[in-house]
Each structure stands twice: as C-alpha cells, then as structure tokens.
Image 1 (cartoon, rainbow over the protein chains, first blue to last red):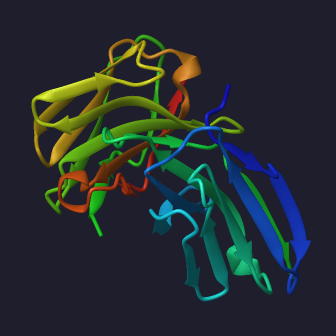
Image 2: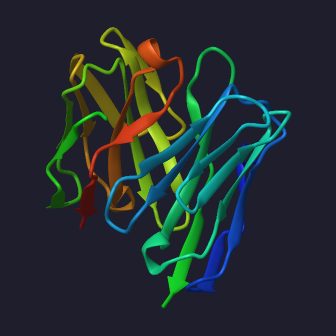
Amino acid sequence: TQLLEQSPQFLSIQEGENLTVYCNSSSVFSSLQWYRQEPGEGPVLLVTVVTGGEVKKLKRLTFQFGDARKDSSLHITAAQPGDTGLYLCAGERGNAGKSTFGDGTTLTVKP
Amino acid sequence: DADVTQTPRNRITKTGKRIMLECSQTKGHDRMYWYRQDPGLGLRLIYYSFDVKDINKGEISDGYSVSRQAQAKFSLSLESAIPNQTALYFCATSDFAARGTDTQYFGPGTRLTVL
C-alpha cells in the first residue's frame, strides 16, 4: 500500500488550461514537499509546506497543505508547455523526518 | 541549494561486474540518500545515511551496498550487477540538522544499463 497517493497519474492538457493534482494519505506529516522532474534529470524542489492549512504561491503554481496535514494539492493556472514534467510529492512523518515519495503525476501541456 | 554531483552520468556494464556509483555534495548537508527510478515505479529508496556513522537500508537494498566515506561523499556499489538493476539512479542530500525538514536536493542522476 502506497503511503502517499498521487492523482491523477497522467494528465494531458492544452496550453492555457488550469489543473490541480493531488497528494493524499491517511497519515499525518510534519512537512510535505513538492518536486518537479524533467526527463533525464533529477527532481527539483518547488516548495516545502509545514503548517496545516498553509497556502504557498510560486508564480502560477499554488500549493496547499491540508488542515489535518494529511494531504496537499498543487494548482497550476494557465499551464504552459514548460510546466510539462513529473510532479512528485514527499512527506515526512514524525521527528525522524525521513521522507516518503508518491509515485508522481506526469503532466503534459500541449502547445 | 546543495551542489550534488554524481559520477558517472552514464554506464553500460555486463552481468556479474562490480559497479560503483559516486555522489559528492559541497554544502555540508548531514543526510544523503540513494534512490533508483524505473518507469512507472517512482523513486524507490535503496540506502540512506543521516551522518557519517549512520547507514540504513531502504526498501530495496538487496544487491546493493553503500559507503559514507565522509560527510560529503556517499557511494553506491553493485557487487555483481544483474539486468534488472538497469535503472536511473539518484543521489540526494538534505540539511535536516539545520532546517528541521527533510527537503531533499537531487543530483543529475546516473543511467545504468546492465547487459
């Protein structure tokens, strides 16, 4: 059983559309990270959220951490082809702080 | 951000050969990790180290070993490579001791092919 479930697994949209991807769990996390990975490269950190209900914005990307710290969402406004990639969430549980990664959402934005 | 380097970037080898993948970081982060990534399977943790004297197995450690030679260096060995170890391998670091979160910084990856 995957600790962190990401949905959808694949998403293909047209440039200019909005989208939301989800990261869900039944466990509570002390913090949660979102990463983006492009083909053949390592994941790159987008954001870390630590407080329940926290909302962070990074240009057209909006990240929200659930009130109970069990889930998170990433919303992209007016998607662009450069947003194409694999979006991974990762959560830390407890003071040990070792992260567990979800399997990711593969996003394709068509021109 | 951590400057994480991996060598080699690409490697083709034969079944039964011993292979070492190396990882170095220049930011003094305490934690280092090795992952493998296969199509459709996400990142799977092989080994991790919280400091030089601390080495821990991840979810898929069989067939692999590691060495944390210094705070900045963490190498992964395949003692006798087999074809199903063909994958993309990533090293990562985190500065948990200073930041209090396990935000990870990844290297560029090593593409390993075992024939």
